[in-house]
Length: 108
Image 1: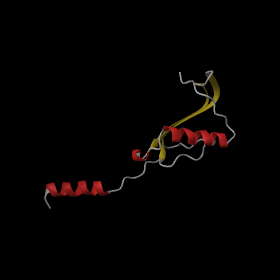
Image 2: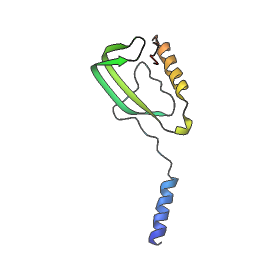
Image 3: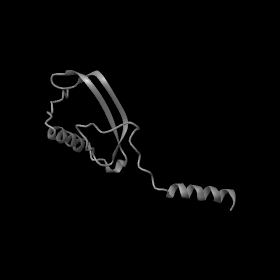
Image 4: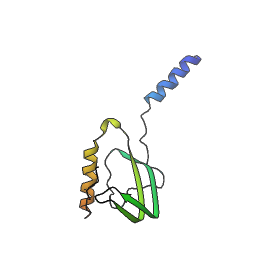
């Protein structure tokens, strides 16, 4: 086997290897109040602090202080994108099922 056919075989082997699903960022987890994430997503960014303030864009705007957790999810297969409205409804329903309340956003 010559050099060019060795490269071709190596490239074909790489192309034929199924993509491994990405794993969540080390040390991350879903929020305990929302333990069931949408299918096909992994955690790509995770930040947790014991105390912080955050400004919410609600009507009227609110600044809340306390424990802070930020979780960013990544869709593994973009062709399976459920759309913004489906994602929003998924989380609204999850919050309501735990007794939470949905506050109106300031869309201005």
